Image 1 (tube, rainbow over the protein chains, first blue to last red):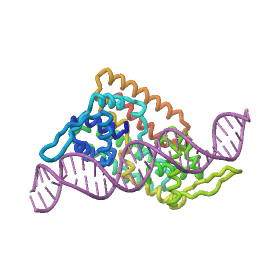
Image 2: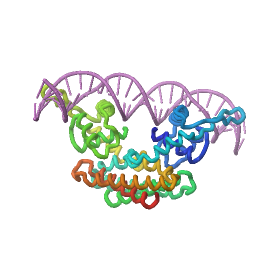
Image 3: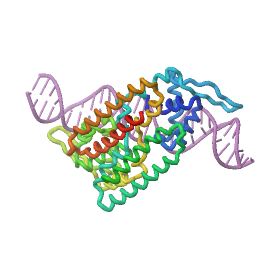
Image 4: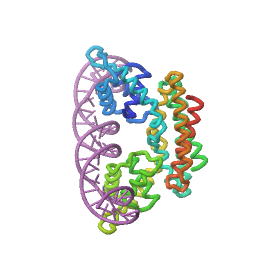
Length: 162
Length: 162
DNA sequence: AGCGACATGTAAGTGGTTACATGATTTC
DNA sequence: GAAATCATGTAACCACTTACATGTCGCT
C-alpha cells in the first residue's frame, strides 16, 4: 500500500462513504495535504483499491449525473490497520525538505544567512498562525496539531542554530 | 530540480568530486537517507544534471577500469543555491509517515493503543540511540541532529498524547 | 582462483505529475 | 443564461523502484 492509498483509506474510515470527487475535495481543501490531490492520482488509486477489494462502491446517481459512493470494506479495514501500526515505517524519514536543505544553509555567507533566517522564521510563524486559525473540529485537526509541533520545533532550531 | 537531485548536488558540494558510484555509496551508507539510493535513480539523475550543465565530469580511469569524477559547475552551484533558499518548499510538508498514520492511532482500542504506544516509544528511543552513536564529524551530522530533534519531539508527543 | 568492492549502466514496472475532456447540476 | 461546482476519467510524461547485466581491481 502506498502512502497516498493509506491516506485515502484513512479518510474513508473517518468520514464514511463518499464519492471519489469528495475524496479529492477533502485533499484539496486540507491545509496540510501532502500531494497535489490530482484526479490522475485519486481515481486510479481508488480503482486499484476497489479491484483489491479494500473499498466497495454503490451507485449514488442522482438525476442524470452518475456517481459512485465509496466505502471501506472489512478487508480494507484490516489492511489499513496493518498499515497504521507498522511502526518501522511510521517513524521513518519520509522525506523532509527542511532537513534536506539545512546543510547548505550553514554554508551561506553571513548576510545571506541572516536574510534566509529571517525569511524562514517569518514563513514558519505565518504557517503556525494559519494552523492556529483552523477549525479544531476539522477531521484533520490532529494532523494539524502534529504539524504545529513540527513547525514550532523548526522555529526553535532556526532561532537557536541557524 | 527534484529533491533527489538537490541532495546529490549538496553532497557533491560538500564532499567534492567523486564518482557516481561514490555518490551511491554515500547514500547507501548514510543512516538518514530518504531513498533507496538505487543505481536506477542515481545514474539517470547525474546524467540529467550533466546535460543541464550542473555537473561536469572528468575522466578518472585507472588502469582498464573506466571511471568519471563528477563535480559541481558554477551553474550547478547557482541552481542549488536557489533550491536551498526556496523557503516555501523548505518548510513544506514533504511527506511525513508519522503524521499520516496518527489519526488512526487515536481510534485504536485501549489495549491495541497501549501496545502500539510501547512499540513506537521503544522504536523511537532506539533510533535516537543510533543517532547518538553516529560520528559527529560525519558529513551528514547536521541532518542527523535535525532528525534527532524530530524524533525527540515525536517521543514527547507519544508519551503525552498517544 | 575466487570473492568482495569498484564502476556504470539498462529494462520493466509503478505511481505520481500536469493538463485536458466531458457532461450534469446548482447558484447567481 | 453564464459561471461555478459536482462527478469521472484519460493522455502524456516523469522520476522513482527492483532487478539484472557487465566488466575491473585488490586481497587472500
